Length: 366
View 1 (cartoon, helix red, strand yellow):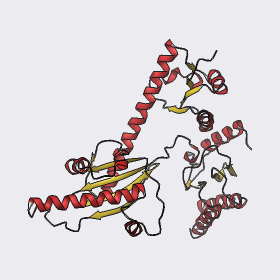
View 2 (cartoon, rainbow, N blue to C red):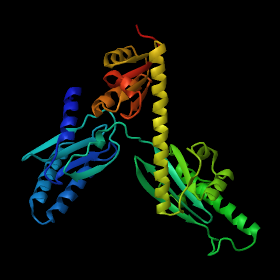
View 3 (cartoon, helix red, strand yellow):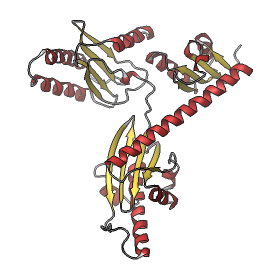
View 4 (cartoon, helix red, strand yellow):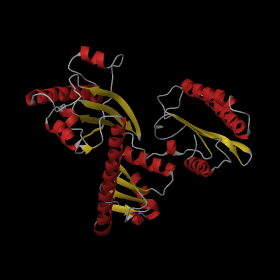
């Protein structure tokens, strides 16, 4: 087992390594991925590289992939929290770094080839939540989800009664058509975002061969401002999905892939604003308690002592700390039921965290 200092040093070395071309290889294997699948991916990349005209770059890529393949082949199964391997030629020497004892799970599969190693798989601050996306307009809708920035389109829906001119026909008939389509969209959202349907036959038809769908952590709805609001105000969604709606409907182009991407962009901005506001509130509470009370401490030594006494309610850590330090303090804080907050470098008041650390306490520690 690597020591904390050793892991920290290796992360810093990975961050500083630079190649003379795009031949440094990063492989991230999440814990749920079989090690054989990761090895197969490397074999495919190796075979693909052999078809490239022989030049210095392809030769260096091949050498890096062979080093990664040898490393991965030594594992009979994927480590508990996944595996991250780096290999390539730096300063005329083939180097590698292996992280197989990470304190938190690798977020997802990743293969990168660049003149720098990709250190994001080692970052503990990634949001692992999954959010549902629903863009709805009269007669058309599209469903998707995103997690850690990746947008997945699930399905597009279209009303069977959609006409070339949606305003034609009797008003009552049009309204009935809209209501029926909204009900269909809501049922589909329940299938995709809650893993349930009105009956097993519909579930079977909607999701062939898929029996389990994890609920989303939140739901973002978009469309034209009028239509999306009409859908939400009409109370079509299951109450459990309504409780997961993160904010008011966003205005986006239409129910297409572009509209889904627009909604995801607005959702990311909203989540980032909310995250910074949450950090701001924690930091303000910390600064107020630090000035007037005795249930806040600042500095590495004081935070370490509070963690030893299991008296930490919230640890605040500066984003300037290394990824390994952040992981370590997050693990120890969460283990005692506390909350861990990373304070961005550009937030006013963050410099009050001596040594980049502070804590709100459950009780005073003498």
